[in-house]
Length: 351
Image (cartoon, rainbow, N blue to C red; front, side, top):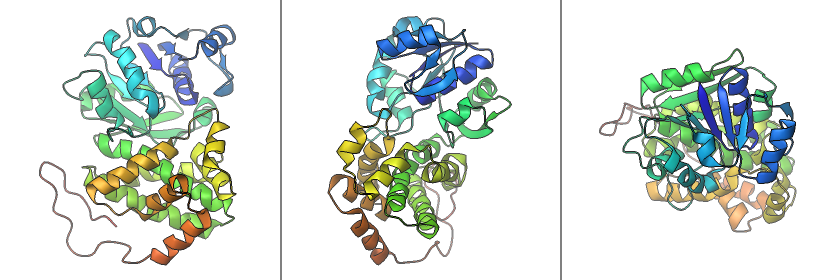
């Protein structure tokens, strides 16, 4: 199958490599002209995914029209803060019938919309039946190393989901299906904020007790906001929620955890980000999630604490002390399950 991957960061490159090694004809869109030249001649992305060669069959280009010509499916893997602009470049060359898979994790800061909603707007599609989401615990480097990996593939259309599952599935990479594209996207975005806090905890010198508490209560915050936005609470206890949260909060390859760790050690956020080649999505996502929690009236004390540290100059240790001082209440909800919202599935109580 002829496929196009938009975005040659570490994740886009890893997915292009996976699909090409499976036998698909892959075209890779690259923003940076110099990186495109390197990829054409050396077949290695030494900037974002060094040490892994791309198959010779991968066509590399900076011209969106050429990359999308004849494609039967698109994988979208660019940072969320530039996603709308890149989608606008692709829109004139993308038929309404071509499925688009979002591999981008984040929430648009200005409009507070999910990437799938942004796609629907930017690509001028009347519905989301040709849009899917790929998310879950998946470091690009480990996918390139072909370590066993399981992710979530969410789509409103089951037939599309089944076709895409076959496209991506390999001996080491397995997508599990979900119809909850809202919850899957929120899990992929929200876990980056909690990972920043986990990194701050590491930087402050705390150990396993603290991180376990942050991850568990962070997951509860993720689920609360998700349910308020129409997601299924159970999604947050799957690969795209708890699985991705565990990976990002504990893995040494996690950019967001690493940024948090440097903050915990006293680093300045502007200097930390300026010294990074890749994007730590959690920083921008913290602002978006803070705004969403206020819009939906959802209490998210960990997110609030991270926001204070990142954008209000609050000392990390003070933020942790205040979180502990404010901790209160029951761990889980008591009584009857919540009444499901009109048109939504029945949901379990949320802690």
